Length: 143
Image 1 (cartoon, rainbow, N blue to C red):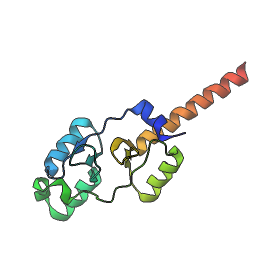
Image 2 (image 1 turned 90 degrees about the vertical axis):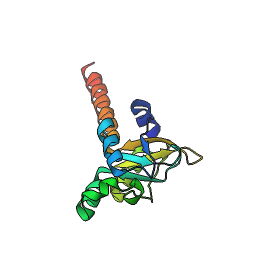
Image 3 (image 1 turned 90 degrees about the horizontal axis):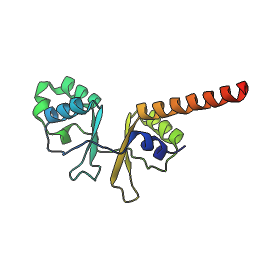
């Protein structure tokens, strides 16, 4: 199975934020869209960084509430692990586990932002696969 299979069900919508926006604006985006991470992009297509709830909490603890008025670029991760729609789901899940990341931007052949997947998206897809396999086996046994 490929990441494209996950995206077929999830969709390709990606919420982005510009690096000069404030952390407070980032918090509002996370809350509004009920998501755990946002891709940082100057133009909506490049992947300049990624910032998650964890990044906010760590910096809030380290520097205090003043971080809320700082630019997102100050707390984002610049070295972003990305994937492709053609990647194997198990391989990307392994990479996410190894790198300890929960969100991976998916880029196209030109390196442009195409989608984002979370570890939750992958788990949901795998559970759906297992349910389908179970149903097929049950049907096979009972017929």
